Image (tube, rainbow, N blue to C red):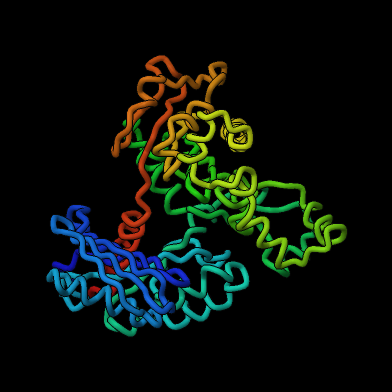
Length: 407
């Protein structure tokens, strides 16, 4: 693979494909884009070659084969085609690796079959991930393809953190345990935070708060995840845009027995009509902030519930870690909402956490500290880059594989 340093990162959803082409020689993004509304009457592809005007067109993409074909055509127009000898590999985001896949994995026919067996753990995500892998392998059957798993970074959690307190035989029979998600983000951000502190990942303990429409927290000790808020599914944990996060499991039984709701109806309620949307009718924190400024009671209560849950996890993970070197915010809300950051950490001076209001108010696209100079625990904002993390892990797998094949 001499001279081949580019990695195409694909994130295949049920009706969309996000992509980035990254040159691992210097980490430069060469192009990125999105194909959406796959399978509908009219879809859209938005392609952004770095340093050149964005291109956008509307047409029907009946399936993922057509969508990835369009991606290949757009890249080829920029001289970055899939047939380029400089393309080293394709890296795929895979949501759920179960307990089988705990590190980035070179894709083979056997791996694809094992991913199919894991579909019951991620019925909404894994089928689309598999489809993307299969189509990409047909487009470039000669090119290494690597699956990078959202769950992998959390796979090393201690058993006492991963296990639920239910009958062991039942849990084992149905693969019920805490898996965690957003792993590529937590891994990338915890490592970048260590760099920001001028230390190695092995030397620092970090609480990572990935706050987007989906939200999760993790406790990272010496570069290793020791606890995380999402569980068997991405529903557990923090209050999210449309997901409830933690609740008494008996709520499900109550809604079924007393409310007469079916399992599918309860599933839809907790995943798509709860969280901030369920509490106040909005899941955009910018709109919620605007409504709060106008004195809207429901928006204020939703915000307070969101922050209260966040503070509980920060306190819990502080106790889990024992020593915390940094609390770090990332993802859409975490990176861009100073009000959330301030509310989450106000009054934690006794824990050594002090936010500087001036630094917190500054917006920027680079990793930065927002704590006071005297804060014992640093507070950071670190933009996540899951695509770069996937590309780095993919490239590392391909290089190891290539080295092992050398005589």
